[in-house]
Amino acid sequence: MRKSRYYKIITIPPSHPMYVMSNRGKVAEHRLIMAEHIGRPLERDDIVHHRDGNRLNNDLSNLELLPRRIHMLIEERRRLANTIYYLTARVEELDEELGRLGFLERI
Image 1: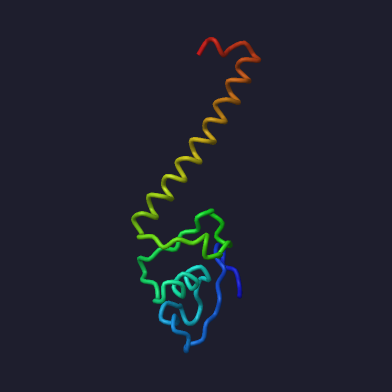
Image 2: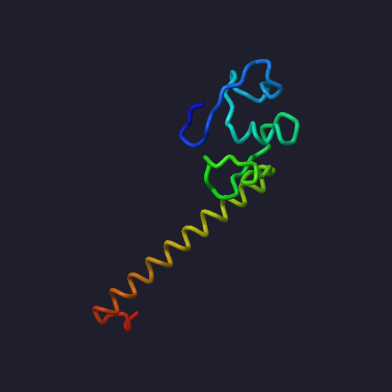
């Protein structure tokens, strides 16, 4: 097994029932786990989502098979929520600094 930049990649032999979804025998472990769980090779539009966001946690309880469109919406929401969190924290930092300097009441 090797790790790609994001996922664990494993090699399966041509005789493996899920070989059809591999790239010359290389397949992302989470996709293989899900395919074996549902009993069929995954289609290109089948997305295996890591519920906890940890792409190396391939426990079946952490994996969810989603349509591509739903996965895109979930990921967009996650990115926006993270952006709001960091921007809110930055606004609070600036408010504190402006307050210390006596300028907060001017804005």
